[in-house]
Length: 342
Ligand SMILES: O=P(O)(O)OC[C@H]1O[C@](O)(COP(=O)(O)O)[C@@H](O)[C@@H]1O
Ligand SMILES: [Mg+2]
Ligand SMILES: [Mg+2]
Image (cartoon, rainbow, N blue to C red; front, side, top):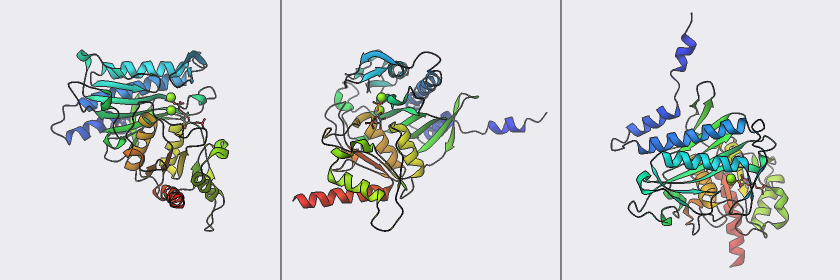
């Protein structure tokens, strides 16, 4: 019997092996981060399985509750939130948890505490659940500033202070993309092994892309730089080909495509929502961290997204992220507008 194909599979780089390899480069490390990450990975596998069974298990539909931002919660939102809270607390490595679905931050009881704060969107893109379109989980990890007396200041830190960030996309395959501040790597869940396997090592976003991604239904309320940028995408003045429009409406899926194919994803401010829609701590920061680590940029319309210092845990910000040159063009349009005003 030929076992060579099976034997070959034992060479696979699982996410656990990958993180243990990284850990071995830091002899002082006691493995706390590896343990925390293994609990996040477990949460992702659990949610992936629930998403796959959503229709069968009658999980589709509203849970009948409204979350802190006045949005109707889906059953899967509620379930995913519970899954991640339990996984993170039981890791014994967390102290503060901020979830999109909870009004207040959770302070883990002292006997179960560790040194990390985790901010997360347990289920991103929930309007896409009922039609089976890709959704995801987004997370960011900080190390506590005040180990003895943790406070909200420990999570109200600029995104550039994050230790790690990532997302898991529940799509045609289940893909986990992670950065610990040393590049970006993508892992795909092999359902037969129940393991995330390194499939996208050292992801680099193309310097310039051919795709823009935005909810154009909001165009009548955009500011002038956003409107000009989108106009340039469709009718380039330099004779180049117009960009293609792709918009899924799940940040995880739109950002994942942007990371792999290049281009820009934007959720700008508009007259109705002067701070945009997306949340700084658990949407804007983790995705900006990944973009910069992959060689792209992330801009708020005023400055570098990762320099923001949030004052509230559910604060929002406009966001333009993606290929370096494309974001540079957007920055130029905002700078020109600024100069007109002074
Ligand atoms: O429907 P809109 O206004 O285009 O907004 C889409 C955006 O809203 C979100 O769905 C918000 O995330 P949640 O589903 O976690 O609330 C993003 O994933 C997405 O980028
Ligand atoms: Mg979201
Ligand atoms: Mg969400």
